[in-house]
Amino acid sequence: VKVDDLQGKLLLLVITPVNISETQISALKAMYLKMLARHNNLAEVVWIPRVDCGRPTWVEYERCAENSPWPMVPNPWLINTTSLYHLTNVTTTLVVVDANGIISCNAAMPMIERLGVEAFPFCQSREEELRKVEWEGLKFQSSVQFVFQILDSTQMK
Image 1 (cartoon, rainbow, N blue to C red):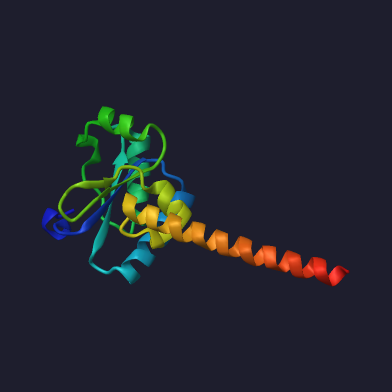
Image 2: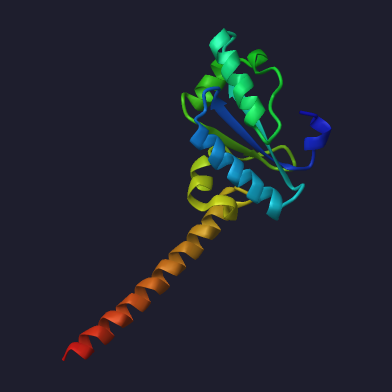
């Protein structure tokens, strides 16, 4: 990963155990490809795997590296695994760093799982905006259902 290539972009730091499931990799790939299609060159995903120096973990790292469409930290065993463990425990964490280098969301994975690329740029204000739209849609849908219930009840008489 060249730092110059990442400057001025929204960074999505995917921090995972090295044995990330194929399902999670597929979901992240799909999100990444949609994000590239919609917001080309505005954001970049960087995978930071949590690895031990043991042989089985290294083999898993190489397998994931071959399947990864995004840049990866090239020497993840040099990262202090204790601090990464506290960040991720055993789950996948997605940290969003804005173009100014400020963390805008330290747990964006649930937002992406729920809203997908629509949540771009994956910050709290965007999530609130989408939640409001979602709520307005539910209110509208409830109103329409209520009208249909009234119409159905009048037709029954």
